[in-house]
Length: 168
Length: 133
Image (cartoon, each protein chain N blue to C red):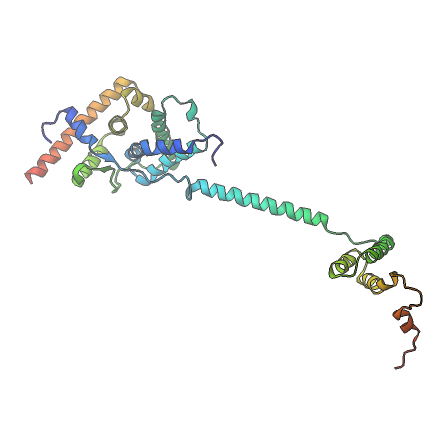
């Protein structure tokens, strides 16, 4: 049910613009594409019902925070494990390099969840460290250091994979 | 990929575009439409209940014996002012206390019409005749 004044086209536009990054963020948290889609849809359908976005200054950060809360609430309710064994792709890889996509997904899934969240929010969500910090409830400096640490791990792991692939 | 610095590695990673999500179930499917269907069903059910209640209230009550006279009067009045048609017969049946009373009213309807001088009612003449069986 949509409340009067709910701008459906505006919400659809937000979904088209941020939906992919929000879904990636939810998948990176849950490891399950189905649950991630449910969380993202839940957030947008609540907006359609007349959410409080009018009072929100930073709608993009607000959407990511809502998705994170939806995932965490759902996880608390069902007490599911946070495994990342899902087979479905997270990315459209450059030059259709699907082995690189699989590599990246595996390496991301190995990262601790707080680092994984930071990388996804900053790199693919295109949020500043201040926005990331606000969403995760940490300081901007902590967000930045988590990101750099995670990026270094990813680079090393992917370089090692790439080297072994070239050698074989 | 070896030798990439942070900036180049970031650019490389950004080349992986997140998969697009399925379309938002705003119309047609999803729980918004299910809720709309439930609300519409409830509205229809409420409307049916209201119509049924109104019909029950407007149903004619059985006429008591004290009202018989007025029932007859109504039938006669109706018979006087309107020609006998299916519609008026139905009306008479609805207003009369019994089917017999209604049929009686219809049978003697012609008597309400005043006869001209020298004319006689066929019914009156026939009633004078003796039946020969």
